[in-house]
Image (tube, rainbow, N blue to C red; front, side, top):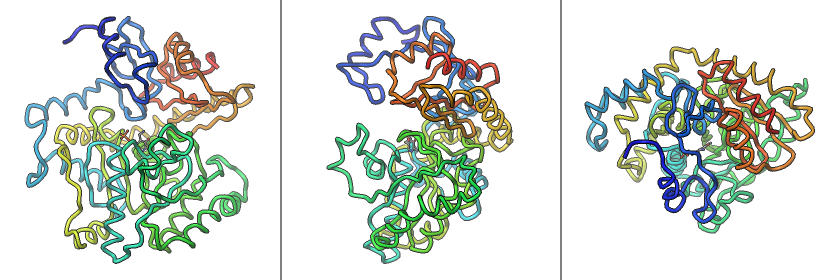
Amino acid sequence: MSGPVTQEDLDFDRAHIWHPYTSLTKPLKVYPVERAEGCIITLSDGTKLVDGMASWWCVQHGYNNPILNKAATDQLSKMSHIMFGGLAHKPSIELCKKLVELTPAGLECVLLADSGSISIDVGLKMALQYQNSKGRKDKSKFLTIRHGYHGDAFGGLSVSDTTNSMHHIFQGFLPKNIFCKAPETRFDNQDPNVEQIVEEIDVKPFKEIIEKRHEEIAGFILEPIVQGAGGLRVSHPYFLKRASEICKKYDVLLILDEVATGLGRTGKLFAFEHANIVPDILCLGKSLTGGYLTLSATITSREIGNEISDGPAGCFMHGQTYMGNPLACAVGNANLGIIMEGKWKNQVKQIETQLLEELGPLKDHPKVADLRILGAIGIVQLKENVNVEEIQKKFVAAGAWIRPFRNLVYIYPQYTTNPEELTVLTNAIKSSI
Ligand code: PMP
């Protein structure tokens, strides 16, 4: 079973194994990988690459991290999994205590599931059960914004913008939800009248929909500040602030998908802190275990928790096999411990400063349409779509692991990336475009 990936293995992979968003008949090139240590990925042929993707935004403190390794091995010898029905255990309790401590007062009831997609489905179901329990049975739709992406399960897909993505094939099978335009005002808009601009361009159309249709809307769901897979847009926090106020007024629950932005990525522990608000339902995933094991959390207020619990169903109708998996919780607990030490703040700030310095000049490059940098996120939007296989070859030759999509070349480096490693990434971007 062990040993390097052989050509025979790769032939099997091509013929039998689905990779994310790929075709079995026209598979894209995959690179055989052997090890990952710190911020370095080692391919089977010995090529070393600086990790620019944090394994799709979930690794913060390095691969093969001794603290997370220890948490996993210690827990492994005690109990790798146990059913969560009727049993309670220390790893989940310690993890949830930290989550309750890290999130603002008012967010205190936690449901642990096994992926970001499911944390969204859970959040949507909680909103529906809550509204139902409140006697607002017509509040059975969700409002969301264009270009959003909330996972690959059916619930999350129903609030994702499938119109211009490959997911449109499922449109006929999805619950019909309501879409409004995504906020256009940029995060870095420096206009002294920026709030008026946001009010006019972004809040007005949102408010009109809520005023007209609030009686059928259970919740408003969005990725706060940074939209991920739907186009990596970075919006002004004032929209979120106003949206939160308007939702409150009309009994629409604010559900924030912080699966990608949570735990420091944008420079704040949670992206909603940029707007100084607290959501009704918060969905976390990806980085909870520092990229080790799959785990997610959906966190709500006591009021929502109690309302659901006392409602007609008498419980929250969700109970998956791997809920509260002790192994994932133990690693998540250790990872939150690292977060609580607080080093991430400076690390992310330094990455942001270096990205601004090193990628900033690309703004004037003839092939670049836009540049967006926030926290440990650097996005170069090109005027034309890239050929992923071709550009990835160039990145690998330059010692970088970066995987663009459409016209977006972006990096989400790990927080522990050192300045030299980060320069490898920014140089790779500069030279390849
Ligand atoms: N929401 C957002 C914002 C995401 O970026 C993702 C994953 N890219 C998801 C939900 C789904 O998470 P997962 O892939 O872990 O199911």
